[in-house]
Length: 466
Image (cartoon, rainbow, N blue to C red; front, side, top):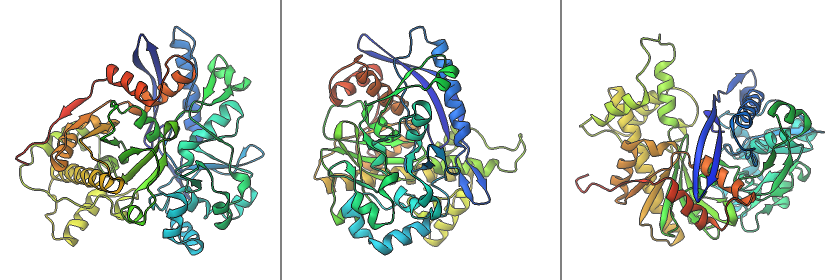
């Protein structure tokens, strides 16, 4: 499940090759109520059940298991197994108060020493600090994929890669930092037992099996979608960087240990857990959200005949732009909330004496070039902070289809870009399940070799005249 859509995908492993088949796709639209912006989680769960039921019906062999991945940081609070309210969306503006409360107890420098996370105002630790009496009532906090797994099986557990995005996990040990939780007022009782990717969570409960058609086993995967996506980077070389590009652009390196220096903190780098105990050392760049929210702005209030062109048509218009466009700071906080992104880009350009994009093609080209610069800068900084050499950048996820963006990233970084696979998150999810079921074996290099043989990436070399 991504921040804009969810999919049910069946993976088939046979003879050293992996195939994917899409069974269902559904929209993930947040809902604003009087108290803020929320995920429509019950509708998402219904869609998951319907999709898994369709997968079970339409697959010739029985499903070996089901694994769930989603975006990070968001959660549901429960008491005696009952959900306390509708989970908030991380883009809800209530989080600023949580940042103030946590930093009042533990400043940014000390907090980074403890959790190694890039400061993002919506990290779970800040969200929990805004809950007040609701948190006092709760006896469990489950992140979104863990909550869905609980509804499927009745097992309360938190998968480690997603737990690492909460700000409450010790990046050195991979365990909950209970002392930190106590310091910032989060009761230890709400933190569920931790499990690793590949752990069997149990079989589907009877009422779920009645909908799906069978009590399919549920397995923990790299439940943070980026953790699954990084599994599917089709390279066994140690000197590559990755960009997992979707709503967000997660740019970084895979390391054996976290980098917890104050220089790393100041540069906005995070240390998140990866599959098989690896560290995902990365920077969060605003990502394709800038494009999708711009299109929503243009379409809002327009008639069907007035609505903007498709993304591919807009990218074609952007590719045809020959004059220089503004390269703006994609990490500026003004671009985080929903709203009129083109107007905010124009404001940024005026404030920084940059040319204001005059057409939709110029807006899109400005976004593409700015994202590419953000990706290139993040790769260079990651390499410097980690003391690593980088010889190529792998772009995986939906952004791998955006040739204009991938070429611009190659041009601005001076490094070859290898684009694909597009369905990296689903591939990583499926491979962790397949390994748990004994259908494949080995470590990450073995899994990535299987990806490379099944989904060859497209290479784009930097152009010397750019």
